[in-house]
Image 1: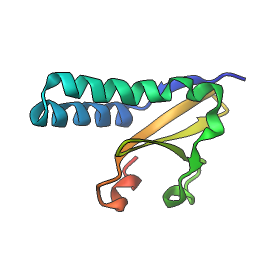
Image 2: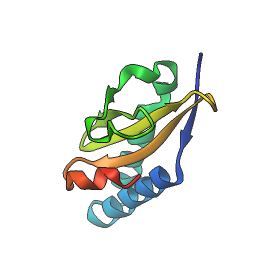
Image 3: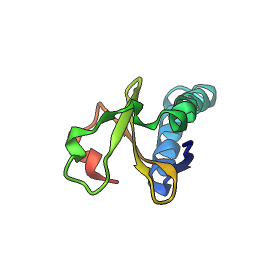
Image 4: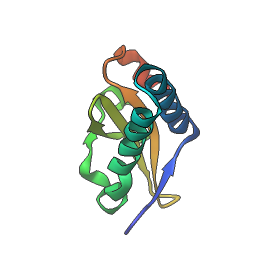
Length: 104
């Protein structure tokens, strides 16, 4: 069963924040590359959705959150069986305070 990849509004806003940060610090070319690489890292996720590890910080949530790591970022997602889609919930910078991961 192949699932549709869905980016939540929150995760899209996080990508925009990442883009804006790197645009200021390293230039637009670098910002585009980093965001594109994060997105590309998730492309095949719908073919093997359980490849990511379970996110222990979110284990008490209703959803079974998993994550992939791309450089400094955790791509947090869950499988929505009801809607037959894989939902990217958050892009979390692992250099931040761990409590920020709860901002889904």
